[in-house]
Length: 183
Image 1 (spheres, rainbow, N blue to C red):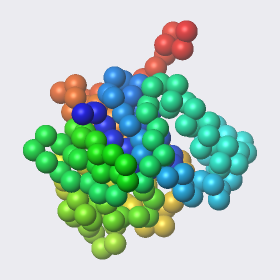
Image 2: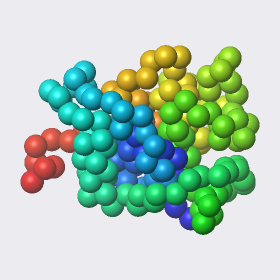
Image 3: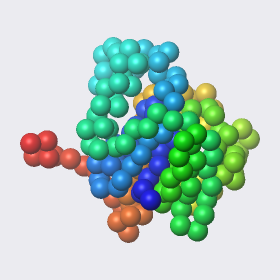
């Protein structure tokens, strides 16, 4: 059993994975490498003057792998909630996790299969990106009508991760590094 399964390897999914793994939660990301970022070019992402979307994805993957995230290039074919968390099924495997982060762009099919509540066409989430299914989070385009920006999606992933980490700590969790942490 792993702590966190993230479905989707774009800005939201990789941001969530970075925060959770960096702070001690075993995290696996399942991704098919079909992120919209491969069609994008970043001019409006804070801290980046100009970067091809595919280059951004590659740099982000290297960063999360550096923290120990397991990146699996595999399609998730199903998700179910059980008494002890979630079971995520792929074409080749099945893994159990305490927390689930859905970061599949506008594809809401896994959220629908899980039984998440919707507000119109959007997955209904709270401010921490948690769905109506406890410990399941939805991020990015599936929760925002036409607000499909990489920086917004990354923030959604970060919000989900901080909520997961807060639950694990039993109090509000802060992921705030200082220069000494980089040494």
